[in-house]
Length: 530
Image (tube, rainbow, N blue to C red):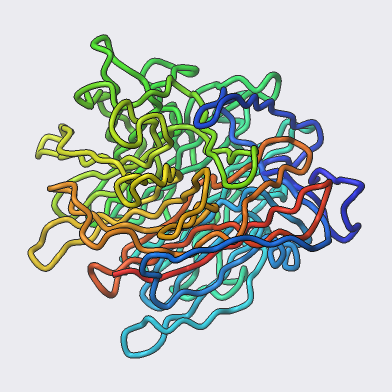
């Protein structure tokens, strides 16, 4: 059951993400701005209660997204499912006839209409738990949702996890839609897989999802012991869309090349492979090699879950001030409170039609205008005919390059890839921002932006584009003193229009819904960029 707080309206619960059972308690020690000591497990969602008041700033912003649509908010989420959640965990995918967005607790579908498919009609949000309610043995309390779209089958995939610390149960949850426009939970088939069988006495956290052209779903998760919260390795599950539709489960594979407990593949990101087979798992955690250079770890896996040889990619130097698993704290205007920027784990990866891999992470650069500041960073990797992976290019999403002197931090990046008119890769990145102050050309409050980049040259093609500017600073912990943001953002290439992208991310709403002396509120926005 969710954690209940006595100060909350009895109709609502206060849930921190992943607290689906009593007794879940994971310590988070904060230190200086832009870095803090981080326990590896990402906390499950938190809930709160009613009230109002407060407000926020605003300023002159860059070009804003076309066809922007409001998504779930801190308050509307609670209206649908009876719980307030932090953080939202914004996730989405664009299909041919619909766009699906989700946060902890709620999923919402937008039908695509008009001559270009860019006219959106929203349908009422439905509970995330209801998506998995038909799965045999489902425990309830799903969190960490990820949404993907398979253009080949015209189906949406939703993956999440749940856990109960008291009963020491944990499940990996997988759902596949019946069609390309799922307007409710009844449009999904789902399975619940016992995650404790993958690592005895452990629960699964932070699932990430990749697809291949054959309808196989590749899911990774970090495993943590119920007793003490120690990291017990990363696991891979390979499932098929057909099996999920038929209610068939999956088996676990230990991703780490050197056994459970090793860190090489912590939070390994699977890949959206497009028309290719198998999958690549990619991990970055600020680790260094004997030369002191930061490295990426990559491994190929086939559809049966068989792992190839681990490849370690030298990034050409020390690009990151963070040490392995160090956390990131991000400043805000007008308050000493900082946002929890998590750590340097990789986001979901993408393989382009030109056989290049792309993945992003948050780092603290060692030099340049953003040295020591949380900065979204992208990697371009080439894949040859033998499956060997090499570094082609990399770059920062620089707040101080976009807005000199702003000290704007960029974090929680996600990316999508398309091709331009000449057949070259085009990289689109969605990310959160925050700064110690506001400005006339940018918003220092927690905001959502997008940037399109030519990865060959590393240059921005259109500059930053605003998804939604923050309206206030943000503080909401439900008594945990951990000011959760993220834990990720979302962007996807439009299957109808190359070079068009749909981003879905959170921003800071005006203050309100006072609970336990806290009044920060998140909101989400879906927007079109091209």
